[in-house]
Image (cartoon, rainbow, N blue to C red; front, side, top):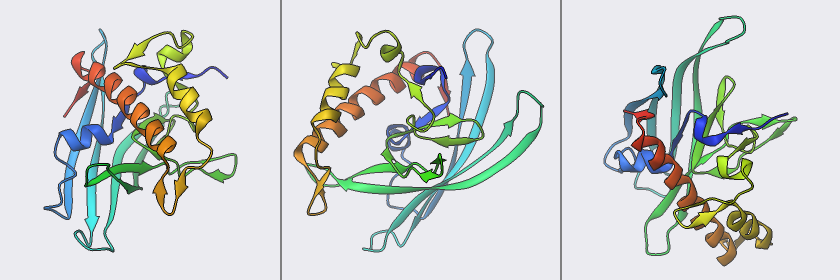
Length: 202
């Protein structure tokens, strides 16, 4: 099965939500939306979402996002109204505060994913992580020779191989933190590239 290309897939990120102020703690619920525009055809698709924060500011705080959109089956033309929840979680930042993550909601081959990821991609009717969708970066499809924001695919793959233990006493290990930073830099750079060429609009 051929892989989809991340740069050509509808996606949205924690970076985008943070940039557009959807992760402030001053509210319990906030609505928004994204429209994607495709190249020279200028065809569009869109998604609405609602970021929810229950018991914010307390130790019981729970953050999640509702995704609301209409999916069209391109083979049959059948439309499905989608409205479902994606849980979010946090890890501590080195200099204080927290870093938000999506928890991938998909199940693949009967196994729940649950990966903590910074970007969700459109995968059939659903949104999930690039691993579940078998989505590759264009640099991977070209042998990984390109560096974005100083990071290449081989850098990330090497860092993944070096992580033997992800958490110790409830905190990410040093090598896991390094992997997180590399993924963050790489994902943010290609999302900014998409924004520069007008693919993402509020």
